[in-house]
Length: 167
Image 1 (cartoon, one colour):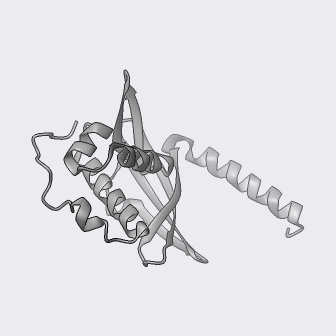
Image 2: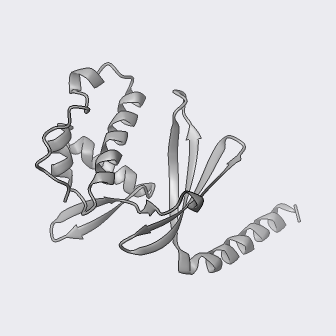
């Protein structure tokens, strides 16, 4: 778990400071603080620990952590009755990253490693009205399964084109 001897970080804004943000800015701020804490918590962290360090409401922390899990920026392990959250992998080399823009979306590809193994992580991103990039979703594919995954995706794409009469 992350070092709980850390007192509340002085760089974390107080409730009074963030309540003046628009709802979207507030959500982005809380998400970025939680992601930063996850990146420092190599052995994972819990909702209670994040709430204690940040003074964010436990329900808010839980909602953000589950959202990060749903878009694969984080993952969760059950340890008895406690859920422990981890930042999803680490980029080993800058060369293990690739981005491509398709219309108004940005697709980011990463090769990540975590305690579960090596993965290809694909994120769908878009710029929101405040011009910050927001992750809309993500998928992680075990590197060992990637070529089989790609074959299946290609077959599916070809089938969709044929059904649309675009072959």
